[in-house]
Length: 224
Image (cartoon, rainbow, N blue to C red; front, side):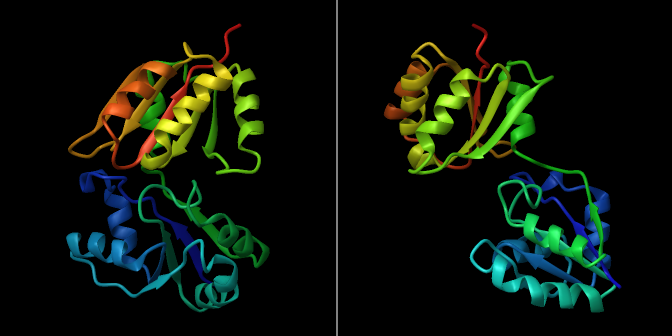
């Protein structure tokens, strides 16, 4: 019976991969990747040649049975996402659950996740926090925003660049224009940026400076 190892990959700066992760990628039998093209670039950078199979959100349900069969007949299988830790707003949870149901050993290496540096560098309390991932695009979005408005702990969200201005506007609408936020963009990359201020001020900034890249929004808890 084989085992599955979840290997976090850099969220931007390729130097952030660990020595242990490199060793596992070299030693494993095969790799399941969110996007094989992205993973191949990382493997080429590390001078590693390895067979990669696609395992992404569009085929996750359909590929489970086939993936389990491959894991069982190989000694070590690795799961990676395009960036960060598999399962954190990326495919992975279903495969982990199915492996456990089949008595397959699971191992998860520590490593990059955009929410942690964004939270720590925000300046908001990080002893207790809530990670919301991506908010629903339509149905249920207002319900989540209203719940976050009452949350006393620091809240961390992921958001796409083309929805950032709208999201900041909704934060101002449901939580108050003076609600303090920190937008972390392109973490670990060349154009890394942290924009701190009220939801309204940060919204105005990005209205005149359209953002690009990966976005994390950190929201100060409700202290009232």
